Each structure stands twice: as structure tokens, then as C-alpha cells.
Length: 92
Image 1 (cartoon, rainbow, N blue to C red):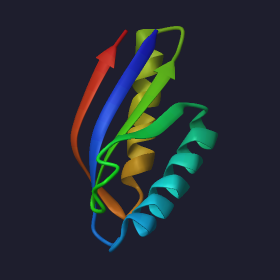
Image 2 (tube, rainbow, N blue to C red):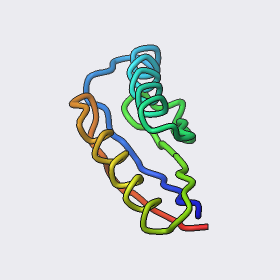
Image 3 (cartoon, rainbow, N blue to C red):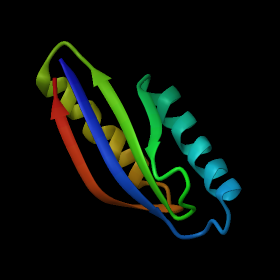
């Protein structure tokens, strides 16, 4: 079972794209290592206060994939540098 999640994020602190990329890279690296998921910035790369993050969870059951996806989102929400906006989930 594959669970794919896209979420929009709003960053308050960066004043440049360089600052934004440093924040995004740090958070995505931690999430990828902690949960062993594929995660990347997939949109709004030219906007310095906005980002679109996509990640995928592969599991043997739908319930387990959904649980891991929820845990990853909670982890991403724990960072004070950004705030989550619209989130979409899809099972494949």
C-alpha cells in the first residue's frame, strides 16, 4: 500500500530563497532519516515564504500507511519555522 501526501507550508522567518532552502533542507533531511520516507519540495521553489512538500509512505497495509503518514505530518507540524496549509492525501 502506498500513501502519497502533498501539503502546502507557509514560512514566516526567511527573507531570501537561500534562507528558505536552508530551513526546508534541514527539516526534510530529518524527516527522511527519521521515518525512512521519500520526501521533497515539489512546488513553489521560487517563493521565499511558501513551499509545497510531497512525501510517500509504503507499507503492507492501508492502516499502517495512514498511521505513518499522520506521524510524519505531526513531526513536520512540530517545527516552529512553518505552518501547514492545505494537505491532500491519496492512496495508491
